[in-house]
Length: 483
Ligand code: ADP
Image (cartoon, rainbow, N blue to C red):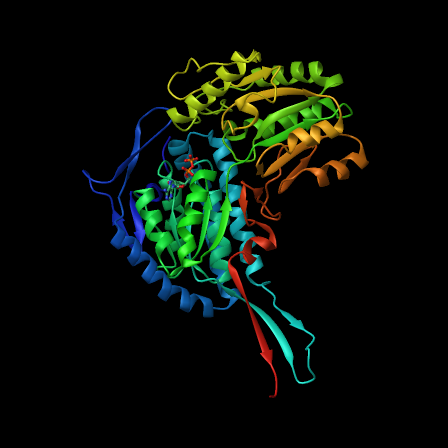
């Protein structure tokens, strides 16, 4: 399979409007997780170059903030169109470096692009307020202004959408962005930057710096010129970066880990519950922060659900994402595989039973069999830690109160799902779940129109919706008087 436009797979970083090409003996090689083959090389951007990107962004951002929202929207819409026109190439690049099946990658490009369009539209709706004055001569106005230069650090599981969710609202609001993509998936980020440049985005407003995460993160977080850090990744690194941002009092958005419960009540439609659980558990091979991590099933429907769900899981084909029949690709790396194996071993040693899968896939390398575990209890690691892989533990519960209590028994609070046909339960349970996102009778909740984000150890801030652009603005209050 070949790229229609090979120039999209660019082995270079974009620093302050200049492309820094990778050189044969330096930089980092990116490997395809399905085959182990090299996809290409990216340069190691130095501290000096990161600072150059930041300095140029400061200048570019000042000018960009003065551009009308309508003009900013126009450029973003052009970027959106170019992303869609190059959807097949972008999907192929993503499958090569990340492993997800081509159709799923194309779906992510479409989804990622939808944030660009959405925020192009929202750019023109960054309304302020006029507040009734507290004295006869006083008029109180509130306006929203861009925070300034933003640093973005993104993960490998959604190599396109995690970037557009951040970069599009930032640019729409009048900010500049210096992005450090995940080391495993830089090419998707670089291709987006190539297209942004073609869309006419002014020079230096969007830099993509590849290289050592600790070093680049250190420069970004310690720079006084960076006024906001937006990060998606693990809670441990999020907490570290939160601390690193404290001395320069940056604004922060953190999208961190989850431990999503998926609750099936007795009164649920069994088919809906099974399909929603498959979607919520196995999307991206279980490697999303909103993936169902623990499936709680009420006692009267437990055996029936486990059986129907297991049958569906057996249909999920595993292999190289370039094969159109494949539904689940490889895991991202060996560390991910070891975590999955560790969770299964711990559950089995403590009495869980494997209904489906349970071991490395015969395809070898980083492939793992989609797995269903029965008889899982609250004492097992798998109910407390995010597995981030294709393992579905099924846990029995008795009453609604018990389900809510176990679902909330976690320091994370990103997504939760439940299935029921009882309308009063829909509201009661939705309100009782301590998290940022609730899916009712569905396993697919993410969309540009809605606020995505969590509470507790799952993070700070929201992406998508009108709130997603507000996070890139500062409020300014203007008091007009006569004395
Ligand atoms: P994961 O374990 O899923 O890879 P991480 O939180 O380690 O999640 O990675 C998410 C992003 O954070 C990636 O872009 C990674 O390179 C980056 N990252 C990891 N460690 C650091 C660090 N110390 N400073 C800055 N960025 C980091």
